Amino acid sequence: MEQWSAGDDKPFVRREEPATRWWVVGVVVVVVGLAAAFWLWWQGREQPPEPPPLAAPRTEAPPQAKAEPPVQAPSLEPSKPLPTLDNSDAMMRDTVSGLVGRKAFDAMVYPSQIVRRIVATVDNLPRETAPRRVMPVERVPGEFKVEDMTISTANAARYAPYVRVFESLDARALVQRYVDSYPLFQRAYAELGFPNLQFHHRLLEAIDNLLAAPDVANPKLAQPKVLYLYDDPALEARSAGQKLIMRMGPDNAAKVKAKLREIRRELTVR
Image (cartoon, one colour):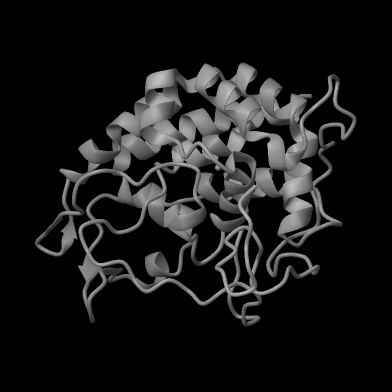
């Protein structure tokens, strides 16, 4: 595991945020991760400055978290020995590349801190912002294109390779790998600052949030300063994950949502 000094940005530990800010794809998150190729901010513009160094973990529940649903989380007793969280990357590289293919893994997935990146991304997608630096997948290539102050239809082609990989996932095999490795995900979630909550419930909450993204085509944009915003305040107020779903275009969004529903069914029938 990389060593972090007191002055370093430690992206896997949640920082303190004002009460008005909030935030919610283990392999299943690579799911939510790959789905969010899926995950990548307004491209073709300057990125905003990185936030200041993150503070120590907090132990309260996520600000908008609802009561935990009556879904049994996977067992914390692994069916076979697992590596420690710090030594889990080799196992996770084999697991994820086995699910998405070696070529896609090498092109799209960050090969280090995989479990921590997945957990941080799942926790962030339902929030207002989801820092790209902790995501488990590479940013979508190419530039973000705008035509007549709407998202250009050409942007959908940039997301298409990620969506194809996500669509090809075997949902049952994916969830089984997640269940087999669940103690690692739970450990990373506790490390993130939530030792008394179940990561499994947060994962379901994140998937439900993505599924609730509105179906919109060519939404109007505004550019008050450098960054583009949705002109409709109701769309601009959506979570980071939902904005990602809206950015990838209606056809890609429909395919991602269909796979997320399939994965969610597998997660809740066990």
